[in-house]
Length: 547
Image (tube, rainbow, N blue to C red; front, side, top):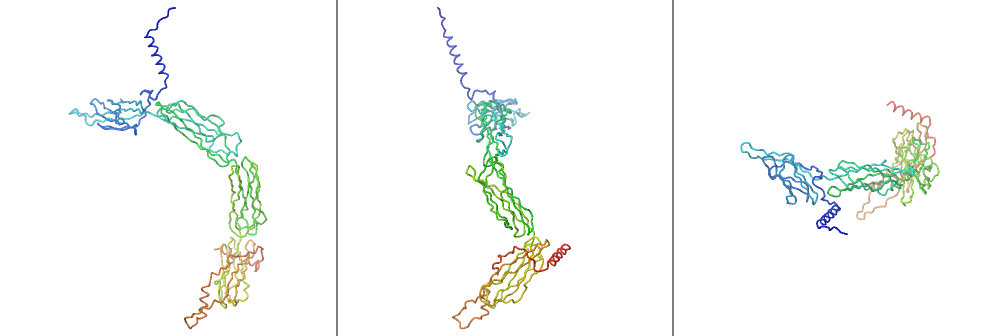
C-alpha cells in the first residue's frame, strides 16, 4: 500500500495551528483589552496657554499634560508625561483627542480638545497668546451601592411564634463609571441562623447604573436574655476591565428584644386625709415565653406613712410564661401631711447565663391632707448657776396643708424651779406652714440636771379632724463653776461678774432634744369647746375669702 508523504510545509502549518490553539486557551491577562474598550470618565477641565501644564492623578499614577505648541490652522501640540517620561504626544484639533493606553498598570488617559483659540494678528500674521480648553478623561471604574432592607427593624420573641423569621432583601447597583464583572455578594449575618436562601451569590456582571435582581434570605429570630443589636453585613467583590479588584460593603442593624421581661405595676390610693387609710397593690407579670423560677420581689416603705398591718415586703416566687400574680397588698396609716412618691418595687432573678436581671415598677404618689402640728421647745442656755434664770421658747408650726384651730399649753415645771414671768398658752388658728411661739422664764433654784416638761397641743380643723401633740423635753444643767484663785494678787474676783462670764461661756442654743417630738396616735377632744373652734376657723376662712 502506497502512503502519501507529508511535506515539510504541511508540518509547519500543523505546528502553527497547534500553537495558535494553545495561545487561545491561555488565560486572558490584565492587558487583554484595547483602547476602544475603555469607558471614560471626565475628571478635569482647564484652559492652557502656550507652555502651560495640568495634572491628573496622584503619586505614581500622576500624569502631566502640557500644551507644547500651537499651529495657525488651529492645532495644539499635546504631550503626556508620567514619571518624567513622555508617554505620548500628538497634534489635536477641536473635537479630537489623544488617547494613551497604559498596558502595564491600566492607568489609561484621554486628552480632549474642547476649544482651540490661536488669536492671529491681522498685521503680522502671528499668533497672539493662543489657548486651548483641555478636558481630561481617565478610565472609568465600577462602584457599587448595596441596599439591605428587612421586614422589621425590631423583633420581639415574646410576641412571636417559633416559626417567625427575619426576612432580609439585598439589592446591588453599579453606580460607577464602568462595567463590573465577576461580581460576588457575600452575606454575613452575625450569628443568625439561616432558614431559607444562601449567603453567597454570583451576579457575574453589571453595566454602569445597572441594578441586579433582588436577593432574599430568611433568618430565624434569636431569643436572647438581653436586648440585642445585630448587624447584617453585605460585601460585594468585583473586577474591572483591567482585572483590578474592587470591594464595597453595607450593614443593616436590627434590634432583638429580650425573650423574658417582667412588668411590675404598683398602684396606690392617690389622695387621703390624715384620719384615712391608703391601700397599696403590687402585681408582677412574666411577659416572656419561658418559665422563670426563684424571682425575688421586694417593695419599700414610703415616707410619711407606716404599715397598718403586719406584712413582709419580700417574697420569692416562680412564674410561668404570661403569668400575672398579685404579690403584695397592704394598708398604710398617715404620719404627716404632704405629697410623697412611693419607692419602686423590684423583681430580680438569675438567668441561665448566670447574669442577674432586675426590673422596676412605677413610683406612684399619694397626697395626705390635713393639719400637721409640730411643737418644739428651745432654751437660751444649757448650763447655768443656781439662782440664775433660763428662757424657754415654745414654737408651734402647722406643717400640713389644712388650717387648724390650735391650743398649746405649758402647765408643768420641774421641781426646784420657780416660774418668773411669760406666757404659757397659745390659742389661734394656724394655716399651712404658719408658726407661732411664746416664751416664759424659769429660775433654777437647785443643783442638778432638769428636763423641761413637754408642752401639749390640741387641734381641730374644718373637716372635724382633731388630735393631740406633745413637744420635746430639753435638758438644762445647774452647777457651781470651779473657783479661780489668782496667786499673784491679793484681791478676789467679783462673784457676780464671774458668774455672768461663766454662764455666757457655757450658754448654748438651747435646742437639746429639739427634734424628739412625741406624737399621740389617739385623737382627743381639744381643751376648748368644739363649737367655738369651728366658729373660729369659719370666721378666719370667711375673712380671707372677703380679703
